[in-house]
Length: 212
Image 1 (cartoon, one colour):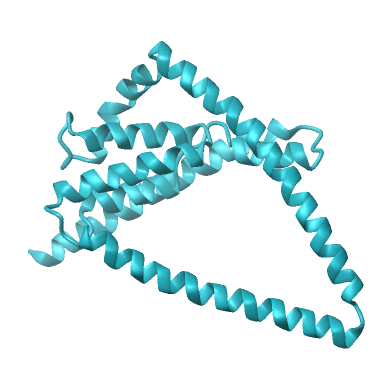
Image 2 (cartoon, helix red, strand yellow):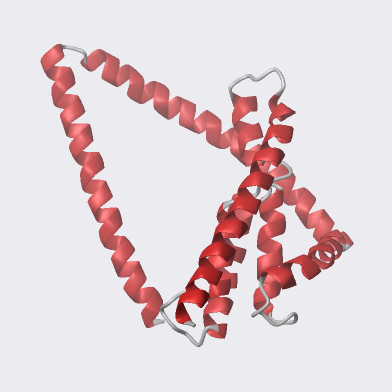
């Protein structure tokens, strides 16, 4: 618990600094607009931006509700469990320190499956729970274990079959073919996932070689 409290305080300070930067940028922008007589453009941008933000949020809600509903149906039908069982042998090789029946394994599999369908909001809680379980396996140490580093790398560069968020954005902006991004996204995320695992393993074995 102390670990999370320390990090919350640390990131709280970081967020406070970022807030100061945003406030400073806003004040400078308003002063600059007043000097140049372009306050009407600033007001127009504010209202147009607010309107566009609401439109995008509503579009996201509809897409996310649809895919989360499908995920729920797949879960009730047992499809997610079968999909997790399909990937479990691969995940066990990537995370050899994690016992097969440990709760961390289930959370990691759920996180990866959600990311595969572009459901980042649904994947985040699973990722947090997975990190908590991996930290317990690491003896509660502040230093990240090999599995924690690997999981973070895979989560950041996860393979995405259906980029839900990007499709929603393309639909909101009137794309003629919003789903044509699926192929390029799959290729790009496969490459990023392979690169993440390769780099992770390279630095891990390099560190182990230095310790010998």
